Image (cartoon, rainbow, N blue to C red; front, side, top):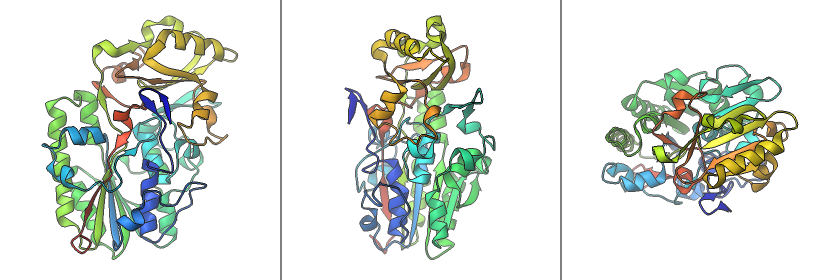
Length: 389
């Protein structure tokens, strides 16, 4: 479904990030619960036929468009097969939402991690999911069982390989609970630990996460030499895993979102428009996916002002319309208030910065979070061990 000419609704249960781990688990003999969603819409049971061990590597910020545009710098990635074409990131197309979507196999409206920064209903505070530890309790904030939990309960060994500094965080617990967490200290260590985990048992699921490509893109831009150098490192890391795959193992490489550079001419500073703060209780989200929580009785006026000022720069709608559009998948009543009274998703290369309230995020070179093709399109790339080729 298309919202506007340049924004699309993720096709949950058809070809999104939420469909990856359920399909892998199904290929390994475990069918996780997904409500009304199909068990394996990507057909990974057939694609991974014969595999006893599967690694899923998520490279933060490795959008499908970026992979195609830089095939010369990433020959290993370019040579991998793409058995189902591009997938879609969830909404908003941002890391905490995507990691929870991957880990649970469910859309954001079900698992409740609905933004980079969200309001905590009834508590007059916000939660930045990348800085979250144990308040609120992850088991309460994100109550859906993960695919890892369900696989482990069925006797399938499951391992997460990710930065040691993220171990035990609220986001890691919410997305990965049920798996054995192995901490890493860089790209070379990640590839070594993924291979070690694959070799540790005759059957198993291993998930690896690499963050630095996204970080470099945010700070330097995806058009920078720094980002291109980081991509080359990612390609070498993937090559090490591919070269070391056990004969009966497979590797899937995917991402959590794409990314685009935002020039100075397409930045709207919300703090330079005092009228946009009238009636607003909390500004949440991030520069390309904003949640605006209104003071009691002010929601209609806030919506009208934001629509007038932002005009064609963003899709600006009330919460009910955003939910009805399907961008979050079905939204559970228990989490719906985490979405703003007003939702604003940036169009084109616009970013809705807030230079006074958010000086750090407002200085970044590249962003993601909205529903343009570049932000949504993520790869699903496949390598097979020699016995499966």
